[in-house]
Image 1: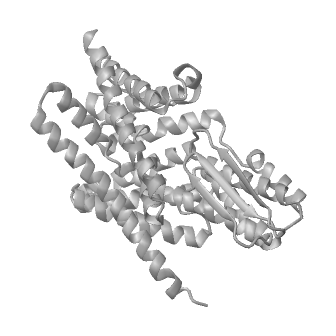
Image 2 (image 1 turned 120 degrees about the vertical axis):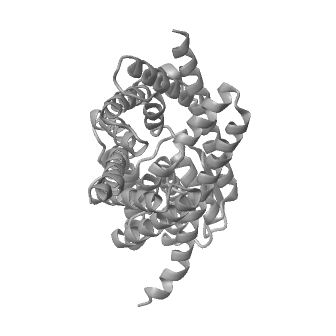
Image 3 (image 1 turned 180 degrees about the vertical axis):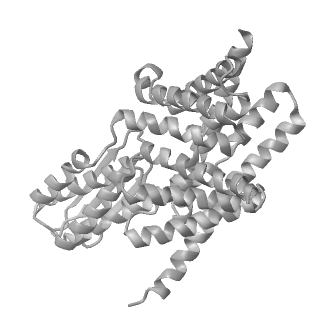
Length: 146
Length: 253
């Protein structure tokens, strides 16, 4: 129980609060703030469950894409805001930093590995959210026919 | 109907949408819907990230075109939601043009904004809670919060000093972030330079550009998508250069 708390729940709460911080920067008000936070913690939970790999990032961003599309339909708002903030915790800031530090210290092998991993993460994020968004848009009109 | 005025208000709406950070297809679609709601047959709208061109042909057969450049801008989701709402309302009700014009020009004034200290607080909160995600402990949280506040201060107040070039701005801000993290860790606040720096850099990371690039490409706007993708790669490079700069300055002293 203690392990579940420290490994899964606490990071998700942190992701929620971090996304809440970003809603102040991007001028999101009202219920949108909570939706962004929930999207962020959902994405981070899936990323943790998947084991911090590129593939996990792909599924996390796919889940965020679906969540953001559904929430945008419910609230009749543009999907951009929710997607933007919820994806932020997954963006590979650490990858950029470590690639830079290997590059500066002259460790070319490690530099290239980290750089490619960073690009892989970014591509996984983009493709994951793109895939579920497109799928949702293709399927939604059939589900919601009056 | 006064078509010059109609063209002006539709370009104005497109501009406001652009300023709020809307996707290209949303700008084009909204302006086209608005013009069609006012009875124009086939309005042409073309938008790329810093320019909107709208061209209409009046029923008398007279073509008119208006182009507007858009300066670099941030993201304002509240404004985006308001624009979207207003566009839907205008298309459904088509009020007289003068009324529509006053509604559109009141848009940016009547949009709720956070006070400047709240935005600064946002810049502080976000890195503070990113620190535990990257393995930071309690001291790191405090250090990351201070670093985030410093970067937020640079972004909000030092714009005139740094200039409007976003590459250079990112270099300076990430140099401040890494230098400050190094100093704070040396002073005993925060344990790991890596964790604190990465947490602070998360506010500069090109997440917005990356997400937008993906959405543009998904919608079929390849030019805008590629330019935003290039933007996110450039921002990433700027972060790396700035961080290296800050750390090397820090190591000298």
